Each structure stands twice: as structure tokens, then as C-alpha cells.
Length: 378
Image (cartoon, rainbow, N blue to C red; front, side, top):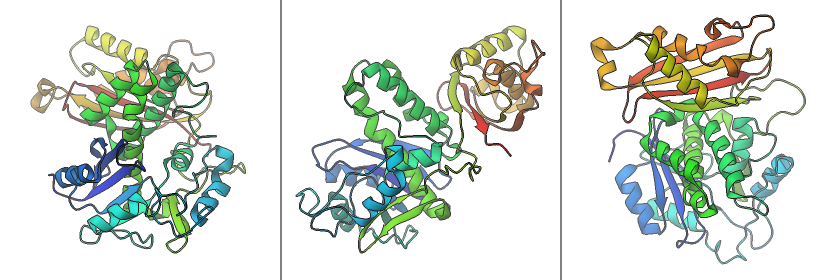
């Protein structure tokens, strides 16, 4: 088991026989691991191995259900705020045997987690909160409606695979998660790319939701002002961000964006070694971002996380500038041609408002995680 603070996300199945996604992020917000379990004992074993003393546990399942019938207050408030985004929660009450008591409440009692949304949690006094990924996706990713990644009438595996890819792009753009450096995330990416049937996507669907829940758990402790409690402990509650603004005023957070493209490019990042290596790297970047294009005249933020092979680190490690410039130059089709310029150096594009770059030893294959974001108008 790893030491340090842990924040856990659980996409909890209502029945122990069904799949439950589970994930943990560390004190910096980086995803440490994720997986799928079923029974309550399997959840206990997984936590004992990866997060025995969590600070916050965010669970996507009814947690506090005091009402005998109807809908909880928290569900009603979330529905009012997010119904137009197709993100209303399913009603829960004690008339449903699965919520009398709720499985999430039983787990909280088993592990000694408080369920009071007035608490922020600590390793000594952990808190479990109820969250709902759909409104969180809408607000965090600036969506006009929930992405249709779950199974539904008329949705083919091919269509769902594309929507899963879009959802994963948005998650990769969450800087704190650092997904590009997590081997399990790359395995999930591969599973989505290779999916040909609905069941292939359903196997990893709960795990992806759990990763978002883990990020919400981290936010609850570190940035509580970015979340809101809909309802109360007495009436039943759900924790989610406020809905996006629709009155024409600018978004208050940089990641409420009109367009975000995130890709992981596998290869040897160009930084030294001659023109041929630079050409191969640029081609890999262009191929990864094929079909991606930002609107003209928008402000742009670019995030680059380079994963270097062992022979590229230490004394042989290339300068960050030498890694950044050819990589951004390969994003020329994403940024679009400026009027009257023809060929140009993309790294000199005045629309690039900021560049954030880092490098680290690769834990798997070398490459880079690249996120290109459209920023809101000033």
C-alpha cells in the first residue's frame, strides 16, 4: 500500500453482483490506480491494498435516503439545475428495496466514514460524499449536454467508441489527474480503441466514471468552493459543480472551454538527434491530431507532458525548449493557418496564450501527452 493522502472514487453498483468501478488519486490529484470489483468484501480488499485510510470517498450511488417515497431534495435540485443538459439523476427512495438501506450508506458505516457534507475529511476522520458524474462532466468540461457514452436506443458500438474517446480526451485535459503517465489509463484507452461490441465498452465504463469521482473527491478536500451541495444531510444530497453559465458572461474557470483536444503520442520526442528524428516525431503528432481544428482567432493554451526514455534522461536529457518547439510546430493544422501566412512556425503563433510543459522518465513507452485548449475570450 502506498503512503500519503488518498482520495477515492467509487462508481457503486446498486447490487453487489454487478460491476463497481473504483479509483484512487494521491494528494497531488494524480491517478494512482483504478479497477473493477463487485462484492463489498472485494471493495474492502481493494481499499486495504491501495487506500486503507482515505481522506475523502466520492461515491456515485444514493448515500443518504431518508424519504419513504418520491424523490430526494438533492435529486430535485440537481434536476432543476441540469435537466436542460440531460443530466437529471434517477430518483431514489426507501420504497425501493435496493435503497432500504442504500448500499453506499452500509459501506460508509462499515468503514467508519462520515456522510456529513459539512466535513472536508482527513486520514483520521474520512468523509464519504455522494456525487453524480453527469452534471460534473457538463460543468467541468463545458458541455452543452451530457455525452451519450452509455448504452441506449440507436447507439451503435462505433458511435459509443467515438463518444468514449471524446470523454477520455476531456479527462486527459484535467491536469491534476496526469493520466498520460498512468499505465492503467493507457490500457483503458486501448480497450476503447479496440472495442467492437457494447460489452467491450461496458467493461470499462464504470472504471472511467470512478476516475472522475476520485477527482471530485480530491476537489472536495482541496478546492471545495468549486463544488456545491445540492440538498442537505437531513434531506439527502448530491455534490456537484454549479451549472455552466448561459447568459453570455465568460466562464469563471479555464477548463470550461469551447474546444479541447488531448492526445497521447507514442514515440521518441524530438529534442536532439537530427532532422530525421524530428520529422518522424512531427508526423506522429500530426497523425494523432488529424481532424482536430480550433476556431479561428481564438486564444489557445497548450499543455505538454513529455515522457522520456531512460537514455534521454540524466546527462543526455534534452532541454525543454528543444522538446516544446518542434512539438508545437506539428500542431499547425490544429491551430489553423493565419490569413496570408501560408507555411509558418506554429510556435510563433501569437494566439498561443500560454504553454505549460514538463518532462519526466517514462514508466511505459516514451512519448508525450499533449492538450490543446481553446480559452474563453478575455
